[in-house]
Length: 453
Image (cartoon, rainbow, N blue to C red; front, side):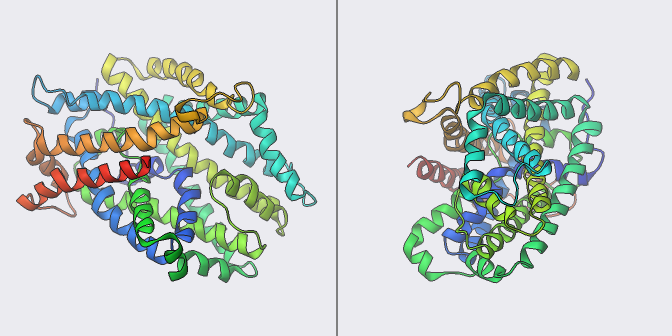
């Protein structure tokens, strides 16, 4: 079967960035910056992104571009007969399924709130308790939770059914362009709000008091965690896009562009959130309450709030759907490569699988209320824990070790692939092998252990 390719370099960058840009870093990154000392956290984050995130991304893309196959088949094509590196691919596809089991429900929440603001479900006279109750009501309604989860699955799988160029690339380019336009418009509007400068100062200026309160080591660890987890590495979600890309540009250059676009969206999200919260004397909070309780209260009290709320949740819906589409494409392509199926058959089977696997999280707060899994955690939190704290770091460590120590491919093959094309090239030196083969895996292992603790 002939391998599909991206129509353009821009398509590759936007689709890959869409995979990395998700609702987690859009609502989590601004809070972490504000809580961990502002500008200092941003500098540390960029440092760890350069020394950890970008190298792992380049190696994951290299496996895909060199093998032209997804998941386990990619490692099989590069490993020596008898080696077992291809089990990384099987673990990664399991990770993709687990990620989508809960991510489709959270994507559904974004779509639900977009619909609420679009249709005027929140009136300007709504109280803070009524807005809070709306979130609880959504979660406790099996119909609403399941319907919007199903919509997110059908949109994602529908885009993948159209193929790489006509579906994933074409629609993600429109979605990401819309996302970037919306985020700039929303940020400019936030700057115009009264008292916005107070929010910007809290967000971006280094605060020695907050650094002292958190402890310098805690700030460093938080920056390291965010820099690693923000790019969704370790589940071969990036590898699949490497299989579709050309060899015209080096992989360090392409990884850098993807990371910068992901960081741009994360930073500008804070430029929207903090001025808005401080302008209306609402203390910003972390997690779901920031997005679904704090900000809706801001929007309903804002002039033209229905419009701004609609635009904000359109932006959040684009951010979540871009990740859903990217991970779905990895799953669909893996079935095509492993079983030799046509895209239509792979899409049909996975549509059913993903709908069924997503049901437990959609029903967690209603029909399955009280159900616990790991250590008494709920279904969604347990699945998130598995992906974030075990599968992502373990998968990333194994991809790095494969790229350095695989007998048939190893660092020589990886660096040849990474340096192919125009752009930034890395010299294959003894120091590089020590860093990639020893220091980087230990850094990732440290991140994983600290995240577990």
